[in-house]
Length: 171
Image (cartoon, rainbow, N blue to C red; front, side):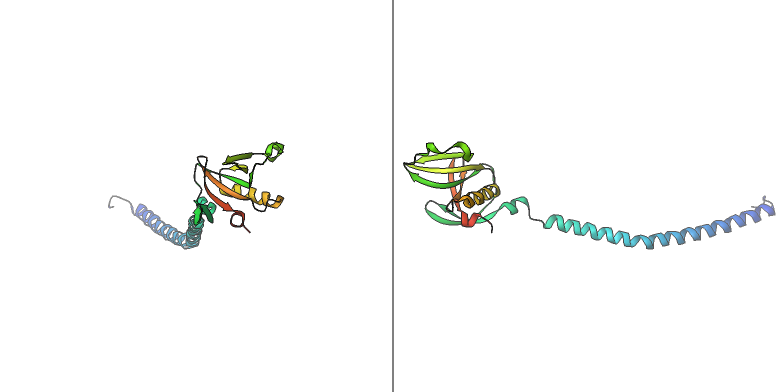
């Protein structure tokens, strides 16, 4: 710096001192911002953790729609858990009769089906793709007066299980 005048050297020294002061101020502000920022980081992490716990602790739709039931299959009682699956249809059976003349029943019953097997007519109401829907309808059918109605599960048109109303209706 020998070719600079003393006045310029003095001015450079002042500017460097001023620059040093600005750097100290900036470091202080940065440390203040960092110390003020940590509560927000901690709160954000806690909220994120709570969200993840909530998200992954909820039962899945399959778990919610699964129900432990007593089912009759091949003439014997089987304890089982029904899981929703494709291809299973649920209907409400309100009765089974020998030689019933059901022609007088009107179409006001909605989806009324009669299955005949060896002279026995089974009266079925509704066709539901999910067990919870069938359970809600069964409650209405029992409330109307068919206390012995129950849910029948069908797969490809073949009855695969029975669910009595005492088990199917959630109290």
